[in-house]
Length: 233
Image (tube, rainbow, N blue to C red; front, side, top):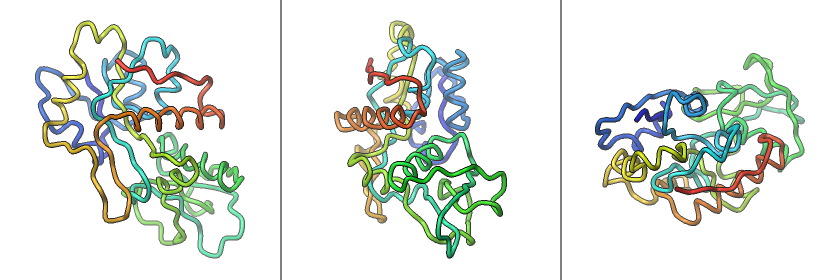
């Protein structure tokens, strides 16, 4: 089996265990979603946006074993504003196709009724939406923690990565066991952070509810064409 795992370091512990005879492909998360859709990977850790954008959702199921979910202030990503700014009009995103870029734009519209135009350069942007590991932005010192803003807006955590596979693969492979072994036995349920929030690494009913809410928000703001069900293996 070919397994697509996002290359950002935050996802590393979901692939630090036993790979077995399978092949792990490391790529940006948006590319992992494409690998799954084009049958170049049979299993992928993708975002809710990737799951909701799949052209034929009936062929895909979520593997409810391990995941990456963020709640409250996690210091993973931020929405940043230029110093002295009165009304933002433009934004720059180092990774424009990334799921958290979409969530940042959604939150600006939902919470502040702001619909910003993209800027090709950082110099031309009032606002920056980025993972915190994407670099320093000294000209944009005013920050909103993205996952904390999501918790305020939606009163739930934000799923960032969930395992998804084609439904026919479940008959050929024990996908839950593969994803569990891939993470290893030491992976904890939740990791509480100094910033005040936490990361959740294992699936439960709260994650399912948060994923359903996230899909509803993406659909309401027209980032996905239809509202899919959360279908588990």
